[in-house]
Image (cartoon, rainbow, N blue to C red; front, side, top):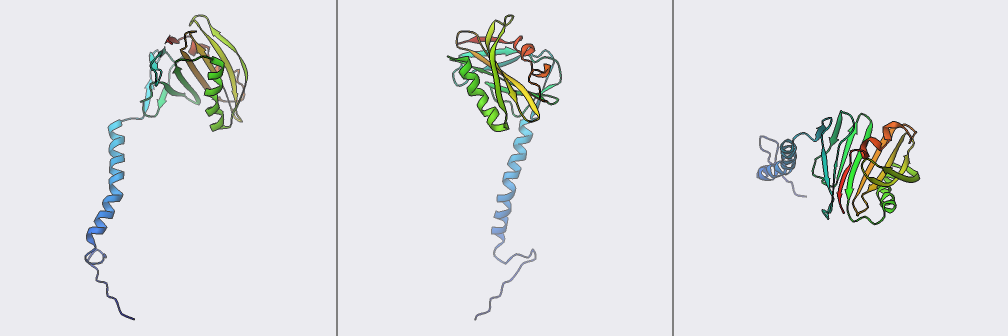
Length: 197
């Protein structure tokens, strides 16, 4: 057997291998630096919603419908990076609200069923008690259903303007009562101004 001698430099690396160590260090540090730079460039990822602020949504990919609305009360925040034009999520203490607009809707009941499926699949909820829902002041009508989980309850409401535009509201709060005032869609839907088809 032959003997092999490895000569080390002052850093404990094999002589002649310094460039490989530097390349490995850059490969590790570069993604971290890019991530931190993007995080700083994008700024705070939580947006505060002021009381009475008017919010806007636009249907996507077909820009046929738009929704103008307000959130009731104060203290709402919108987590995440704010690039979505079609849907936005909001949080107030432990209450979560999701508002969405859609266009070209033939059946509001079918839209409710399609939109609630990812919610119940992801969180282990069930939904039931589908019933007609209308808000005369907003001039919108559609359907509402209850969402029930182990320690949460909520509602999903889908309303339309009879031209094909639809707005979807999902409210989830801790508790077991889907009839609780926290998940009542009326204060939200009353501010909906739905346009388009």
